[in-house]
Amino acid sequence: MKRFVFIAAFVALCVSATGFAADGAALFKSKMCSACHGAGKKAIDLKESKKDKAGMMSVLMDGKTPDGKAHTKLSHEDAEAILGYLGK
Ligand code: HEC
Image 1 (cartoon, helix red, strand yellow):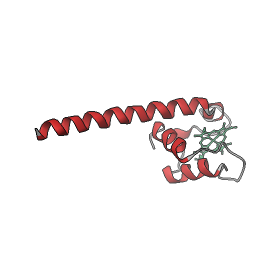
Image 2 (image 1 turned 30 degrees about the horizontal axis):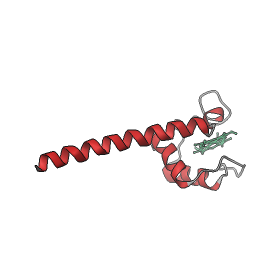
Image 3 (image 1 turned 60 degrees about the vertical axis):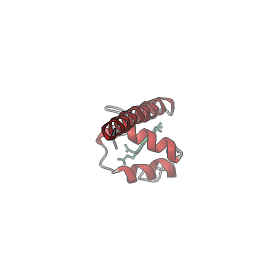
């Protein structure tokens, strides 16, 4: 019985983890992040960023780039989902 509960919890965790990632991927497209961010584009490829999750969260929730220019502003939930998708 204990083993069943463990397996059920593990499966639930996997399902919720992939659901989260898919959501972030959809947001990454719908919020146009990839219009600016990526190899050869005007802003850095976010997978190459030296910022940790907290540093990225503050850019996304303050709506300002590190040098103070206007940037896409996101809710806490959307920022979490996108950073989850980016592996942060
Ligand atoms: C209009 C172009 C544009 C769009 C759209 C955009 N960004 Fe940015 N972003 C920038 C620029 C420019 C910077 C600052 C310079 C740089 O990091 O190359 C920046 C910086 C960042 C940073 C800080 C990176 C670092 O290492 O300092 C994060 C995180 C980020 N953007 C995430 C996102 C996400 C997620 C989205 C979509 C919701 C998004 N950006 C949409 C242009 C854009």
